[in-house]
Length: 451
Image (cartoon, rainbow, N blue to C red):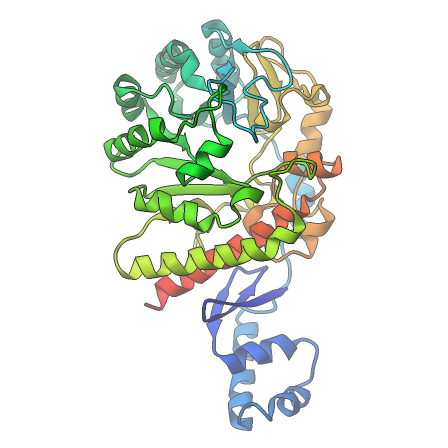
C-alpha cells in the first residue's frame, strides 16, 4: 500500500508496509499515482503533455529501483504474525491510579464528571494504593521498568498519599529489583513550591492541564462557581516548566467546537515559553454543543497545516517547541507489538479506582461491563482481558485499508467503544484527525531533513 499527499510544498510518498518515506518531484509523484494500475506505455502517454518523455522514463526507472529494493509497493508482512501475536504472554507494566474521584474545577468537557466517574466522590487511601503497587509488582513478571500515573479528578487533592506511595514504591524497588517511573497529571490549582520540588525529584513526567488562550481556557475550565482558572495557573506552570529545564512535562489542552482555530492556542502556549505542548480534540457525543462535528474537519485540517508550517519556520529560526501529535520516529519507533496493538489497555495498562477496582483504562472507569477485578483478588474477568488482547489493527476492519494504521496502532479502544459499541470499531472523526496529524508530522520530518 502506498499513500501519497501534498503538504506545505512537499510531495510525499509513504510506503505503508515498509515505512519508507520519499519526498519526490512532481513527475515522480504523478508516476507513482499510476504505477500499479497502468502499463509503462500508458503512463508515458498520459503524462506526455505535462513532461518530457525522457523525464517520464527516468522517473519510471527510479520508481522501479525503489520497488525492487523494498521501499515502494511492498507487501504486508505483519498480518501473518497476528496469530502468534494473539497468543503472546502479557504482563501488567503500567497503572493509572485514581488518587481522587474529586476535583476543584468544573471542566465542561470532563469525561470524569468533575472527577466522580459516574459514581461517588472519593479519595484513594494509602492502603489501597499500596495494594495497587503490590499488584503491579506481582503481575509484572520479569519486566523491571514499571509506570504509575497519579491521576484524578485532581490528584493533588490527595497529595499526602502521592508522597507516601512514592516512598513505598522506592522501598519496593530495592526489594523486587524493579524501577518505578512515576508521573502526575494536574490542573495546577494546588500546585506550590513543595509540590514542584517533590515532582522534580520523583516524577519522570508531569502533565499540566491548560487549554490555551485565556478566553478559551476559562470558558471550558472554570471553578465550580464560574470563575476562570487561567490567571491562577499560568504563572505556576511557567515556573514549573522552567524548574524542569523545559523538559519532562507537557502542557496539555483540549480544543472544542468553540475554538476550531486551535493552532492559535498552541502558539499562545509556545509564546508563553512552553516547549512541550499537547492540544488535543475533545471527544464528546454529538449532542454536546462543544463536540467536534464532521463539518468542522476542513477547518481543523487547515489548522494542523498552519501549525505545521509555523513550526517549520520556527525550527529554521531556532525557536522550536514540541507538539505531541507531530512527534514521530521514522527510523526506530515502537516495536511490532506496539504498532499492532497500541497502548495495551486492558492487558498491560490498567486503571485503579479509589476503592481498588481494576478497569482497562481511565476512560472505562465507571462502566461496570468493563470491571476486571480488584487489587485484593486480582483479575477476575479474563475473557475481557483476552478481548482487549485481540484488539489490534487487523481486528479493526477500517484499519486494514488505512495508511495510518502502523502509526496510530488502531486508535483508542475507549473512543471506539463509546461511538460504536465495539472496542474494535472506529471513531471516524478521531481517525480523520489522526491521519491529518500523521501527514503533518511526516512533512515536518521531511522539512527538517531537507534544510
